[in-house]
Image (cartoon, rainbow, N blue to C red):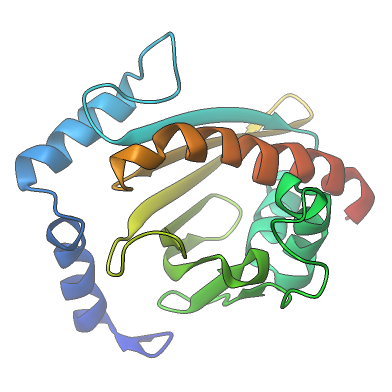
Length: 193
């Protein structure tokens, strides 16, 4: 069975190699999993592993949130409202977002500053990505996992991000809020059904 250009076998081998490609041993992966399940109460940044755990409540259905994160045009509305755009970090002339809707497909966001591959896409429920910033050393990749669940009249989005360069933790934690969650909350009511 093919998944977006990669065979299932290739994808399984690629996913199995991610921890070592990130410089993580099996013990470090287990520690990261354990720490993200019980994040420190004083911070969204794990102090035992390089990981971020964030939870946000968004004013839209899971379907609309999933679409905003997996559709190029919908995510461009988020980029337009992001701090990266309003601060000039992403120039107005930047390339539009490109997001593949297939497992194994690539994405490039914020004018290409953020890029990676879709690892898992469970419609309206879960997105897992191999994710990196252009400023990171060549070959450095992280894993970003988005879990969507219904809550009252909106969606609870849970982000677990791990495997990024340790020095980037505080910057990334703030960046998720300023460039994803806050503009996403503003863009969703405007995007309709």
